[in-house]
Amino acid sequence: MKRQDGRALDELRPIKITTDFVKFAEGSCLIECGDTKVLCCASVEDRTPPHVPEGEGWVTAEYSMLPRANRERSKRDVSKLKLSPRSAEIQRLVGRSLRAAVDMSKLGEHTITIDCDVLQGDGGTRTASVTGGFIALALACRKLVEDGVLGSSPIRHYVTGVSAGIVGEQAMLDLQYSEDSRAQVDLNCVMNELGEIIELQGTGEGRAFTMAEQQELVRLCAKGNKELLAIQKAVLEG
Image 1: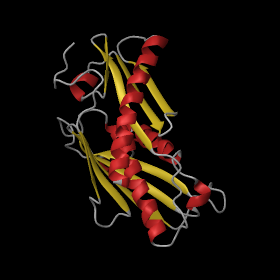
Image 2: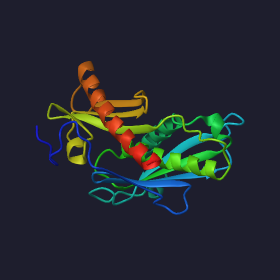
Image 3: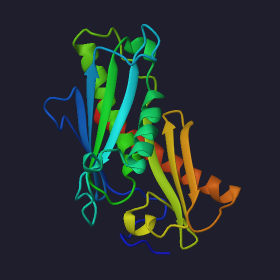
Image 4: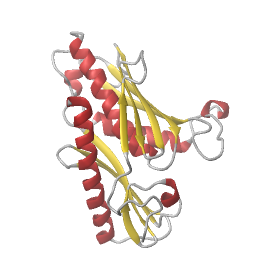
């Protein structure tokens, strides 16, 4: 099966990450995965939610799409007086994924909020939010160290996310919208730099799928996450 954009079945879309995209955030980046563009900003507060143990920190995330991020205008969540179920699900995923990257005892009594705003959506916005959100988080932690607030970075592992799916009975990596919208199976995979899985979301959109198919999709995601990890390290360590 030939992909619309000519990519190989196991090939990521072109990735571009621009750091310090926003002047005032402690850490920020614009991540572009093909035509998907997400602005990720990290904000630091010197307080934590009531449920957090004394002496420890917290990492959380918020996610939203601009009204014209997609092919048709959508209403802002504020106009509906509540967060859409999709946005709520995605921001919980992003928050869980990024908390897995941080040693909360080293973060101290600080809260880092990662705002992920989709400027343009063409599939894979949640995984782009994880990958870009980690860059913003790492930059914010670096600033806390540089400013003398923390003695060392609380980052334990790099974290990336990517999708894979089955379209026309063919497994493929990093679905764009034209593929995602007709996928029989859709799977999102978040991993750390050790290749361990943090979160796995697999759904039979058009049909059920087998364990063997799931494993093939996870293998594709592992390849994609390894390549995203290299990009993250080039951005943060280069």
